[in-house]
Amino acid sequence: MSFPTKKIVRAGIIAALYVLLSLAVFPVASGAIQFRASEALTLLPLLYAEAIPALAVGCMLSNLLTGCAVLDVVFGSVITLVAAILTFFTGKLFKNIWVKCAVGGIFPVVLNAFFLPVIWYFCYGELEYLYVVQVAFLLLSQTAVIYALGMPLTVHMYKLKEKGVGFLQP
Image 1 (cartoon, helix red, strand yellow):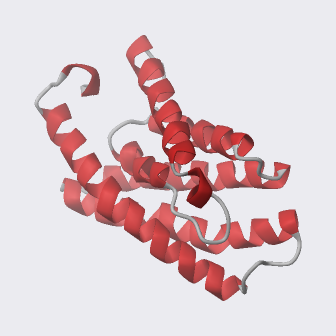
Image 2: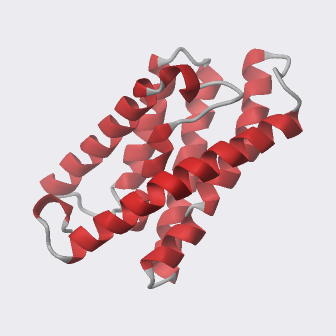
Image 3: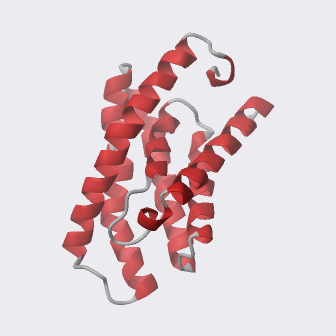
């Protein structure tokens, strides 16, 4: 797979936006109860393959800049990478953009909700909250961000891409 300049630049912008959106809501972007606005970008692999590594890099940089433990930086980024890959392939299965978003959003929600608390246990020792409570908080916050922010953003970008708007077209 080749990456022409436009795709490399788009990947850089996605990674930078992920970091900026994470830092913009920093006090609530990390921890057991989190609202990471940058997770709205996790549906972009439905539109652009280059969003896959961009999201992983953005997550890694965000976690580094916010002082996360090394295991959290590494494995949190791996979770984002796996979710992005699964979201990308979901986009290949469905034609309707709303269905793509609805199904593709499941992966970042579920993988983050169920695996992040496990990583946090190994990074930070005792869980701040019970595992089940952390999963519930993450399910709620990830669902809110991805479906309330990410879905409308992705649908709008899809429509612009279909119209052939400059930077958004393939």
